[in-house]
Image (cartoon, rainbow, N blue to C red; front, side):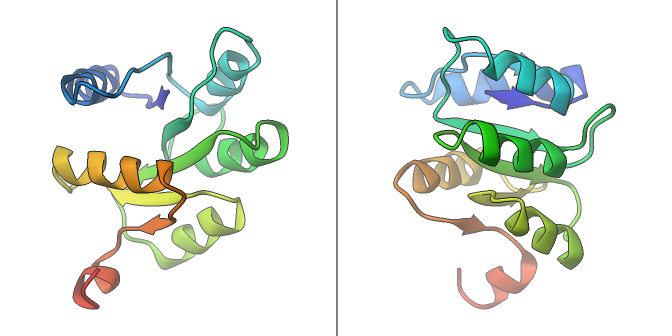
Length: 133
């Protein structure tokens, strides 16, 4: 599932993910509240939600916190344009399984998604890159 407030970014993410062949996008939302409403539907059962950190109505970290409480089987990866240490800490505190910077390439995002599906926590920051992530 994808939650991103910019339609062009959301559509691009969907297309890129589905080109991987083994990934199916089962829903899209433009904010955290829409994401939670979609997750309430029994026919929508994602393994992972890719969630923009900054969205209107309900931001990604608030949505991640609600997902961890209400839908513990759904892993959350926060997508952010900013490497903000406080935001990373807030995301981890909200129970996310991944934090990926938007300036990474699509292949890196897919690798992160697969690692999260394998049970790993993926935190993509420059300091992690410098440490040999």
